[in-house]
Length: 61
Ligand SMILES: [Zn+2]
Image 1 (cartoon, rainbow, N blue to C red):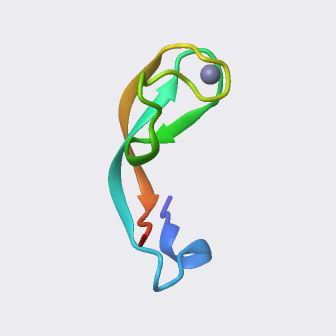
Image 2 (spheres, rainbow, N blue to C red):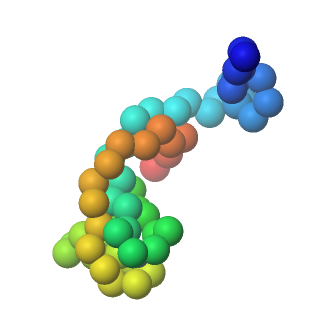
């Protein structure tokens, strides 16, 4: 089986980078490190989050 993830969804300007995110342990909520809450609690349900790496489009602020 040959997978080509680039073909369908990736536009030339979409640069994916590995970012630290904080993913909730209780729900599907997560947040980028840059936009994390001060106490690193889930913005949706307030539970603990765990840091993990995800490939996400780069945001130019
Ligand atoms: Zn949550």
